[in-house]
Image 1 (tube, rainbow, N blue to C red):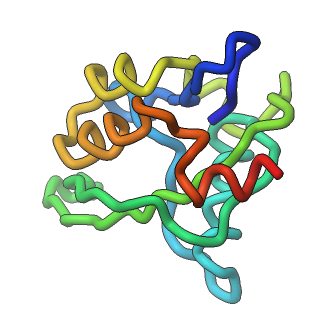
Image 2: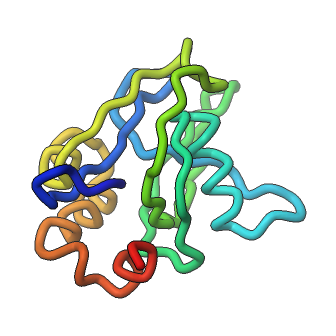
Length: 138
């Protein structure tokens, strides 16, 4: 996420590699890494986003992950705030994904997961006043 020149929050979304739907950068937990540190790595790999990550989740959502054999696994995703300082032009998954900035409301309209949509909508009203986000801005 970032604040634009007018002070409005923008959320960075990427397309999924399989269906091309809009999602937040996310990934599996990594051995030896704190969950927020793994989220920071995934944001860099999936979206080329670098910045300051919060160590406390702002929420979570569930989604069905389709495995190679066609079965679905219900996954719980913890969402950590990342204030983006820089977007790399050359990142690991750049040939597999598109990325785009959205308002939280527009992002909420584009995602398939109802819980993620609800979480994004909580960022619409005075996001800079949310303690988890304001701590990253100071």
